[in-house]
Image 1 (tube, rainbow, N blue to C red):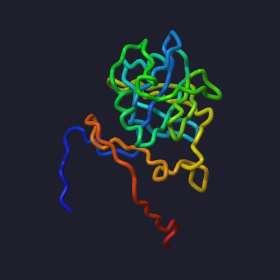
Image 2 (spheres, one colour):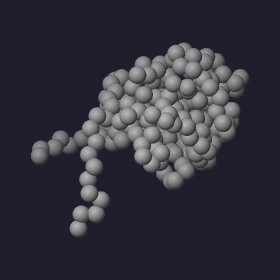
Image 3 (cartoon, helix red, strand yellow):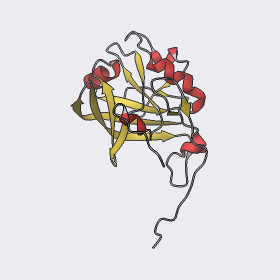
Length: 187
């Protein structure tokens, strides 16, 4: 197999997580929604997200100490783009994206009703990296559409048809269509 050597943007080769919309509240209590694709689980109850320094999402998380991760299905891919736009901090980005804010169980920040999964989080810590902060949230609770659950009670990303950003910053998304199960212990 022949391979290209990348000397720039090699991090783009790691696209392992579905896109998400993080909701927060601005200082006046108006919902903020931002699209994110650079994140990872860093523990059993912690999720780390790369958030730009000048982001309204970052300022809101630092001020209020809470946020909600919302995982949409591909039918809401346009909402991902709408929430990624730079919009005035006083505008309700959930409504502008044509989505519905609903109350969360443990935080003041709203969840997005149309999303197949929602994760309520509180700010835990951060690490400054270049033009971003790696913001780590402690997971308080999650919500999952029953029809999108796998046998273990977690999200089945194929059933849920969650979008993966495959050509950032160009708005091109894909879903997973085939799964392969391999032997766990093959000795």
